[in-house]
Length: 362
Image (cartoon, rainbow, N blue to C red; front, top):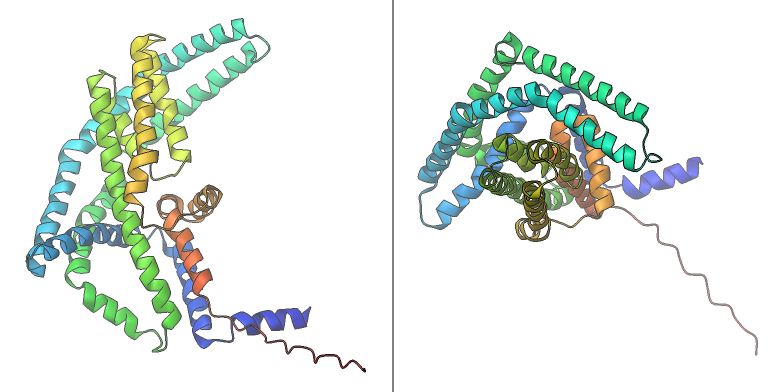
């Protein structure tokens, strides 16, 4: 057993750079586990800087001076934040509280549909199961409503957190954009001079992270905006809230689309019943999901390494479990990081001398 362990260590950790890379990965994992929540504003700032860097690069390629491009991209970011705080957030909040008030009526309608289904197919579900489900959902809605009230902006901790994000994040974004080269040079000076493998991993991951983050932001905006226009055109209640949920659902591959289908279906069913408008809403929603999965995603993420769906789902479950929302958002690039490290990891394979040829007597 000891020989097997020694051979494994000699094979994968005989290179000094491999040891340094392993320590850096272990330190990064510990940082996420123990200080990820505390450093969330800095992480959010890095994400925004990644997105804005694409705009800056585009403007510089069109002949704009770098400093002017930075200020212009930063002004766009500040304008988007102000629009979010002044316009979008209050509207979504009002629709959330209105939906919570109307939720008992929606659940009662759902219960009636289940009763009708049970009468037609009594062996599939029992009345007792329907009643138990109704009681559980009502209890969950009550708990959620109480939580939302306790987490409103009137509470001091939430207000402080919001102020931290709205003050610290814009400042960090500005300095990350303005002093990007200086920050990267300072970080590079702390690494060994011989870092061929780390450079290879960094180049690949930098491209993958940037493409993924920018593409995901564009996907959220396009899917959410298209859904909002479709729901408004069909006069669906809570169109803005549902559009925000559908847009954010693209962050969680496969699982998000399935989960967000439930509130869309329930609200459309409560408003229209089993009539033609209900089927039109569901058809429009499914068309948007199909276009997103078959056209928009391949277009936006064509340069991102393909991962098997099983790997993506397992990455969402694992990184989401250890890092919450951020882990879900970065599940795919983190899985790509693991893949890149695995492909570039230096190893020494023991050379086995070929056996001497047998001498045959004539």
